[in-house]
Image (cartoon, rainbow, N blue to C red):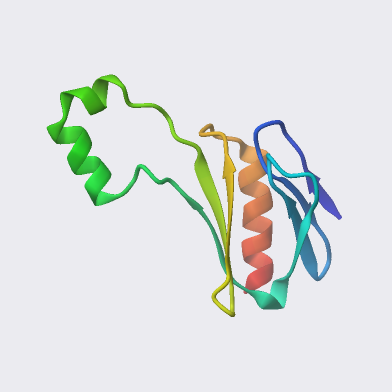
Amino acid sequence: MKVFKKNGFPEILIKETSFDIKAVDYWEFRSFNFNEIKSIDIINPQNTWYNKLYFVLSLTARIFAKEDPLILRVIKKNDGIWDYNFNNEYNSEFRKAIKIIKEKLL
């Protein structure tokens, strides 16, 4: 079992046939079986065309822009979507844990 735990990031437990995620602001884990998952991705909510257009056209947006949290999105095969917010900073161990999960989905 592989464990990822760092302040500001979802806690992830990777098991043989499933993985558990605990949100930053929640006290219990949510369990997902690998065969139930369609995809798992890291999403930057600021990386949309309308946000980019807003930043280009608005001086105020550029001055007061802040780094919004990134989103870890888990999409199940039944189209259930689970979002987990986390710090907008790079963490190689977190990225490795997500990569391990993605490899097990294939």
